[in-house]
Image (cartoon, rainbow, N blue to C red; front, side, top):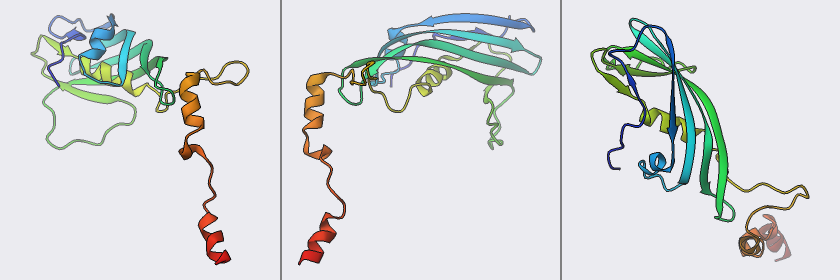
Length: 177
Protein backbone atom coordinates (compact mmCIF):
# COMPACT_ATOMS: atom_id res chain seq x y z
CA UNK A 1 0.00 0.00 0.00
CA UNK A 2 1.31 3.42 -0.87
CA UNK A 3 1.61 6.13 1.74
CA UNK A 4 -1.81 7.55 2.60
CA UNK A 5 -2.07 11.30 2.88
CA UNK A 6 -2.93 12.90 6.21
CA UNK A 7 -6.58 13.81 5.67
CA UNK A 8 -7.61 14.05 9.30
CA UNK A 9 -5.13 15.60 11.72
CA UNK A 10 -5.67 17.31 15.03
CA UNK A 11 -3.32 20.01 16.31
CA UNK A 12 -1.70 19.04 19.60
CA UNK A 13 0.67 21.85 20.39
CA UNK A 14 -1.84 24.71 20.28
CA UNK A 15 -4.95 22.76 21.27
CA UNK A 16 -6.60 24.38 24.27
CA UNK A 17 -7.54 22.31 27.31
CA UNK A 18 -11.28 22.40 26.71
CA UNK A 19 -13.90 20.68 24.60
CA UNK A 20 -13.74 21.44 20.88
CA UNK A 21 -15.41 20.02 17.79
CA UNK A 22 -13.65 19.49 14.46
CA UNK A 23 -15.50 18.66 11.26
CA UNK A 24 -14.05 16.93 8.20
CA UNK A 25 -15.50 15.88 4.85
CA UNK A 26 -14.04 12.91 2.99
CA UNK A 27 -14.82 11.68 -0.50
CA UNK A 28 -13.89 8.99 -3.00
CA UNK A 29 -10.28 10.20 -3.12
CA UNK A 30 -9.94 9.48 0.61
CA UNK A 31 -11.18 5.90 0.21
CA UNK A 32 -9.18 5.22 -2.97
CA UNK A 33 -5.94 6.19 -1.20
CA UNK A 34 -6.27 3.02 0.88
CA UNK A 35 -6.52 0.89 -2.28
CA UNK A 36 -9.42 -1.14 -0.91
CA UNK A 37 -11.15 -2.69 -3.96
CA UNK A 38 -14.35 -3.28 -1.98
CA UNK A 39 -15.14 0.44 -1.72
CA UNK A 40 -15.85 1.82 -5.18
CA UNK A 41 -16.64 5.35 -4.04
CA UNK A 42 -17.99 7.16 -1.04
CA UNK A 43 -18.39 10.28 1.00
CA UNK A 44 -18.74 10.91 4.71
CA UNK A 45 -18.93 13.68 7.25
CA UNK A 46 -16.74 13.23 10.30
CA UNK A 47 -17.06 15.02 13.61
CA UNK A 48 -14.32 14.81 16.21
CA UNK A 49 -15.47 15.97 19.64
CA UNK A 50 -12.16 16.54 21.43
CA UNK A 51 -11.51 17.12 25.11
CA UNK A 52 -7.86 17.70 25.89
CA UNK A 53 -6.59 17.21 29.44
CA UNK A 54 -3.07 17.37 30.78
CA UNK A 55 -1.98 13.73 30.21
CA UNK A 56 -4.50 12.50 27.69
CA UNK A 57 -7.15 13.52 25.22
CA UNK A 58 -10.58 11.98 24.65
CA UNK A 59 -11.85 11.98 21.08
CA UNK A 60 -15.42 11.02 20.24
CA UNK A 61 -15.57 10.15 16.55
CA UNK A 62 -19.00 10.46 14.96
CA UNK A 63 -19.46 9.81 11.25
CA UNK A 64 -22.18 9.34 8.68
CA UNK A 65 -22.02 8.87 4.95
CA UNK A 66 -22.68 6.67 1.95
CA UNK A 67 -20.29 4.12 0.45
CA UNK A 68 -20.70 2.41 -2.90
CA UNK A 69 -19.73 -1.27 -2.86
CA UNK A 70 -20.51 -4.30 -5.04
CA UNK A 71 -23.61 -6.29 -4.22
CA UNK A 72 -22.62 -9.75 -2.99
CA UNK A 73 -25.43 -11.34 -4.99
CA UNK A 74 -25.59 -9.57 -8.36
CA UNK A 75 -22.26 -7.64 -8.40
CA UNK A 76 -24.00 -4.36 -9.30
CA UNK A 77 -23.09 -1.15 -7.45
CA UNK A 78 -24.86 -0.78 -4.13
CA UNK A 79 -25.03 2.37 -2.00
CA UNK A 80 -24.86 1.65 1.72
CA UNK A 81 -25.41 4.26 4.41
CA UNK A 82 -22.87 4.04 7.21
CA UNK A 83 -22.83 5.77 10.54
CA UNK A 84 -21.20 5.24 13.86
CA UNK A 85 -19.63 6.60 16.99
CA UNK A 86 -16.35 5.54 18.61
CA UNK A 87 -14.40 6.70 21.63
CA UNK A 88 -10.64 7.09 21.26
CA UNK A 89 -8.35 7.88 24.17
CA UNK A 90 -5.05 9.49 23.14
CA UNK A 91 -2.43 9.20 25.86
CA UNK A 92 0.57 11.51 25.88
CA UNK A 93 3.20 8.95 26.81
CA UNK A 94 5.32 6.27 25.22
CA UNK A 95 3.44 3.14 24.23
CA UNK A 96 4.00 0.29 26.70
CA UNK A 97 6.08 -2.64 25.50
CA UNK A 98 3.56 -5.10 26.91
CA UNK A 99 0.00 -4.31 25.84
CA UNK A 100 -2.24 -3.75 28.81
CA UNK A 101 -5.70 -5.21 29.09
CA UNK A 102 -7.75 -3.63 26.35
CA UNK A 103 -10.85 -1.80 27.46
CA UNK A 104 -13.90 -2.96 25.50
CA UNK A 105 -15.31 0.57 25.58
CA UNK A 106 -12.54 2.58 24.01
CA UNK A 107 -9.60 2.47 21.68
CA UNK A 108 -6.25 3.73 22.92
CA UNK A 109 -3.60 5.57 20.91
CA UNK A 110 -0.26 6.84 22.18
CA UNK A 111 1.21 10.16 21.11
CA UNK A 112 4.13 12.35 22.05
CA UNK A 113 2.89 15.55 23.72
CA UNK A 114 5.72 17.42 21.97
CA UNK A 115 4.35 16.63 18.49
CA UNK A 116 2.64 19.40 16.55
CA UNK A 117 -0.31 17.26 15.51
CA UNK A 118 -1.77 13.76 15.53
CA UNK A 119 -2.93 11.93 12.41
CA UNK A 120 -6.27 10.12 12.81
CA UNK A 121 -6.75 9.28 9.12
CA UNK A 122 -6.26 5.52 9.49
CA UNK A 123 -8.38 5.36 12.64
CA UNK A 124 -11.27 7.13 10.91
CA UNK A 125 -10.95 4.95 7.79
CA UNK A 126 -10.99 1.73 9.81
CA UNK A 127 -13.96 2.92 11.86
CA UNK A 128 -15.96 3.63 8.70
CA UNK A 129 -15.02 0.27 7.16
CA UNK A 130 -16.10 -1.56 10.31
CA UNK A 131 -19.52 0.09 10.01
CA UNK A 132 -20.14 -1.71 6.70
CA UNK A 133 -22.43 -4.73 7.03
CA UNK A 134 -20.92 -8.16 6.49
CA UNK A 135 -23.50 -9.11 3.88
CA UNK A 136 -24.00 -6.44 1.23
CA UNK A 137 -27.02 -7.13 -0.98
CA UNK A 138 -29.79 -5.11 -2.53
CA UNK A 139 -32.98 -5.17 -0.52
CA UNK A 140 -36.47 -6.10 -1.67
CA UNK A 141 -39.21 -3.86 -3.02
CA UNK A 142 -42.62 -3.49 -1.35
CA UNK A 143 -43.78 -6.73 -3.03
CA UNK A 144 -40.86 -8.74 -1.65
CA UNK A 145 -39.09 -8.90 -5.03
CA UNK A 146 -35.31 -8.53 -5.00
CA UNK A 147 -33.89 -5.26 -6.34
CA UNK A 148 -30.81 -7.09 -7.63
CA UNK A 149 -30.05 -7.15 -11.34
CA UNK A 150 -32.68 -9.59 -12.76
CA UNK A 151 -30.28 -10.85 -15.46
CA UNK A 152 -27.76 -11.92 -12.84
CA UNK A 153 -30.47 -13.49 -10.69
CA UNK A 154 -31.39 -15.75 -13.61
CA UNK A 155 -27.91 -17.27 -13.48
CA UNK A 156 -28.02 -17.67 -9.72
CA UNK A 157 -31.48 -19.27 -9.65
CA UNK A 158 -30.70 -21.69 -12.49
CA UNK A 159 -27.24 -22.66 -11.32
CA UNK A 160 -26.65 -26.26 -10.20
CA UNK A 161 -25.27 -25.01 -6.90
CA UNK A 162 -28.67 -23.65 -5.86
CA UNK A 163 -30.55 -26.90 -6.42
CA UNK A 164 -31.48 -28.43 -3.09
CA UNK A 165 -30.09 -31.89 -2.81
CA UNK A 166 -30.84 -33.99 0.22
CA UNK A 167 -27.78 -34.78 2.31
CA UNK A 168 -29.37 -38.20 2.92
CA UNK A 169 -29.36 -39.14 -0.77
CA UNK A 170 -26.11 -41.06 -0.33
CA UNK A 171 -27.62 -43.01 2.57
CA UNK A 172 -30.72 -43.89 0.55
CA UNK A 173 -28.49 -45.27 -2.20
CA UNK A 174 -26.67 -47.42 0.35
CA UNK A 175 -29.92 -48.89 1.67
CA UNK A 176 -31.23 -49.64 -1.81
CA UNK A 177 -28.08 -51.63 -2.66
